[in-house]
Length: 460
Length: 178
Image (cartoon, rainbow over all chains, first blue to last red; front, side, top):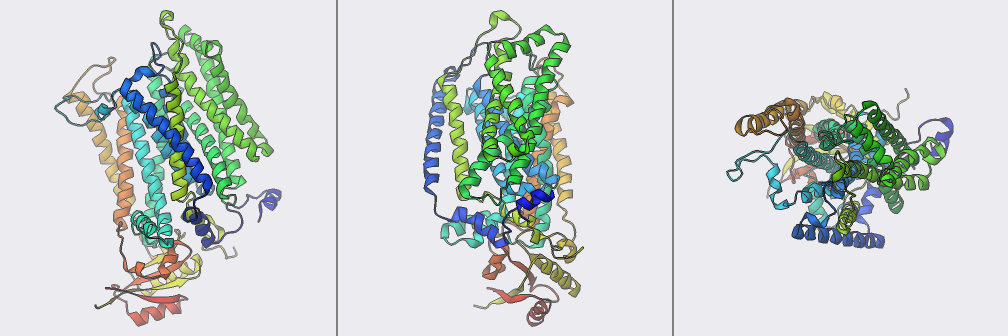
């Protein structure tokens, strides 16, 4: 059944279009790795790795000179670095949601997008982790956050501090995501091993495929391990950004000290993550001709999730305002009026327009299925979500309890270059991934093809 | 150099054929056989007479230990060995200890799931007699194969090969190794 008839008969369109055979799937996805490198790839990685140089330069200068090169001052002890940290960690959440929660909910459409969404999670968390690491000032002593026995310090980290929770939460998140991603890759690496024509591919894919033989005695343990990893990652989708939010919520700064923060951060994280999956997914799909694998149905489903989570953050914005008024606390009230109408009004209204107004387009089926519309919308949502973190961090810090200590925060050129640099790092890693590893989970896609069901030909 | 027989493999048409073949091989009384496919096939465990993987119990057991270890570490370091006052918080605070306890439990369980799966599957194992077969490479693409190992009590090269052919297997191949 093609997409048009499916549309008319109100049946879900097939997950993968064009009725490929199992072999077609291996052929299509592997050819992206085995074929000649497209010239566009070289241009893209040339650009992105140049931006990585910008990042290295900015971080190198920071380590040489110190945190003074950033726009930090009193009372803004946290600036762009923390904004960017929260932004990048949030981006990662869509990958985990797709790979874990949608797996447990038996949402078979996830198979087309989970591999690159998971890769995106890893790369986003690498970019995120960079910021707190360089923000500590003396990065060469960062191992002090770990509880290791030492005579030199003769003390232990403070486990009652949200900043330490954060190190554990983000560290766990990254490691578990890596394991999940790798376990998912094993059968596909075996496919590439068995197709390999060059020595180097044979050796490298051979090593990383671990000698996978695809026997049911292996699949049995494999499937359970995958299920367990999905089950373990599912609470992480909710816990990581909840713990990130406690960095703020456990303090007493007006605008931060609220109980709505954990769910509000999680919804925002999923919202921004899906926007990034959408942006990258549309580009990857177009460049590699994956229209049959990442279909309009997949994109439409993601748009629906963005509409839902966008409404959730919109509700949170409203709820925060209401509670600030209802609490009767004058500092809290001031913090929120200051957000919308104070010196950073432009950031607040950019956030509202991008995060609350833009997703409303997705109420309309026509717009939800239009690629140019969703592409532009996804970019606006990412911009909006960066502004959300900017609003939270900066407006609250710049004007706290004591008006005499207020100050206007301005980033320096190094704040800007470091942030742009992380985009270079993210894109470089992503480009390496699409060139050397399968962007779509072949074994999983084969498993959702209609002929994969042993009862496919039975008449019920 | 003397070569010995490691097993016999045969190809089947599609997942349904492989499932039926698995039932026949099971009913014939073979134990050391496996059904290879590019993706897991629903209902195959039953068809092969396989028991459920014990991995869940292993991970569950170690998760309990990890939870206690994570909580114990915080209790001992912050509550016993090195007490210091921060924002008037109690030295031992189960609320404040929860996030790290949870992280330690999840992290350990994820490692055990991954490496436990590898251990149960005997991975990594880079060399296996089955890799000597050219047609076995189809398994990771679109091939559905049954393999019966020579160490099985019922195994006999001629009879087992004939049996695989009888139940619909094609390209029956004897796998040898040094």
